[in-house]
Figure 1: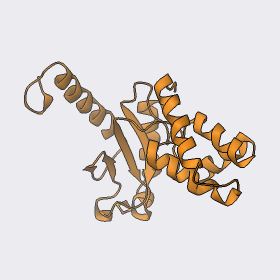
Figure 2 (figure 1 turned 30 degrees about the horizontal axis):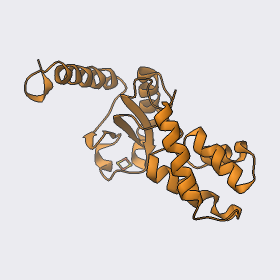
Figure 3 (figure 1 turned 120 degrees about the horizontal axis):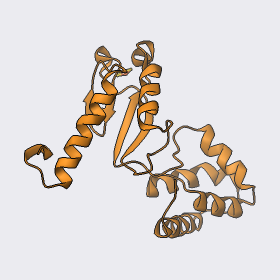
Figure 4 (figure 1 turned 120 degrees about the vertical axis):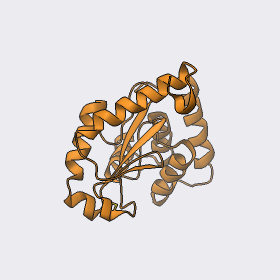
Length: 175
Ligand code: FES
C-alpha cells in the first residue's frame, strides 16, 4: 500500500517527537513502537527507519519485532475494521475458516488494508459473547454465528449502504 507524502511526513515527525524522549538503550524499542502505533494507528516504514537509526540497529530488526508481536500494524487501518474473534470458543467453531473467507473476499491478509482503504482485517481476543461464536465485529457492530457464506452478503450490504450515502441516498444510506 502506498502512503501519501503527507503520511510519510507525519510518520517521520511523530517518530522524531517520540524518540526525543528515549535514549539509545534498546530496552526502549518496544515502548517507542507502541507509542508510534498509539499516535498513528500503525508503524509505517519511514518511522521504522528512524527508530532503527536511533537505536543503532538494522531496520530489519525493527521489522522482526513488529511482525513478531501481533499488536502492531504495518499499514494504516481501514475506514471499516473487520475484527475476527480468535478467542477459544470462536477458534473451536471455525474462526480460521471465517478468516480465510474474509481474506479471500477482500483480497488481503490479516493485518492489511484494502488499497481503497475501505476495509482492514485483524484478529482480536475474545469479544465477550462466546455463546454466539464464531463472532466477527465490523467496527463496533457485532455479527454473531458467522459463516463463510455470509461474508459476501455483508460486503454487499456495506457497499450498497456506502454507495447510497455517497450518492445522497435516503435514510440509512439506502437509495
Ligand atoms: S471467544 Fe469469541 S466471543 Fe468469546
